[in-house]
Image (cartoon, rainbow, N blue to C red; front, side):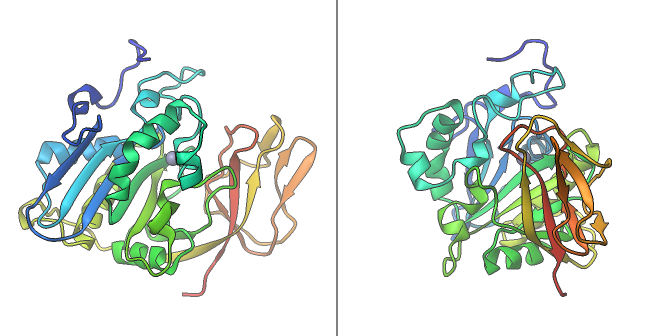
Length: 312
Ligand SMILES: [Zn+2]
């Protein structure tokens, strides 16, 4: 599976054994009561900022002040396999690891590399009270916190304080994300999750963001020991954006009308922002925010979300 000429930003072999019975997953117990916190990297194999953030936490010897801390590398096989365009790691081997997270899919008869890995990891996720899932994006958008639809997701993003752009969204029609799995999305349950898009895949700033968000996440739940505490800069006030629509690609000839990077606000409804073959993709309302425009995307996948800035 591993392409020998693929130089990886982190040598993952040193993390392979883990200490949980699940390869590439490590759990540290403070022996003090507290929440069970998990930070996840490489849910998408080509999104390395999270792996570099975990590598940073391992190198620093960061341990939880209370509760437990689990650090895991999810789709390692994809990360270790070269993409067909030769650009780096693959996003996934057979299917998107982050579209599988419902009981019926995980318990179902279907199989794939990603489903097998998800089934192995699942008990550790079931054992998690608060999950941070670290990702990166195709375009150089400012970082985004994906809060889901439940109010507790928004509350968590506000407590984190960064990224300052918080996206309220239902996920993708192709399947459920881990951040929306089970109790994480259920109202009336204290467990919570956030997916953070740290920046563009190859932008070194995405690593800085992933590290800062990880420290903030530990601090939010009282897991950050004084000795581990870095200087956490003050974040600008949050902007909450509610997703109002989603563009799924229907044609291999999908293209954007301009070179969008993300978070542009398009003043007028009906403005053409992309072409899906012959079909014009237009803004559904005035002041539509373009969220995560992804120009290199396959049929059936999400190329863009529209959003509206919520009242402060
Ligand atoms: Zn991702």
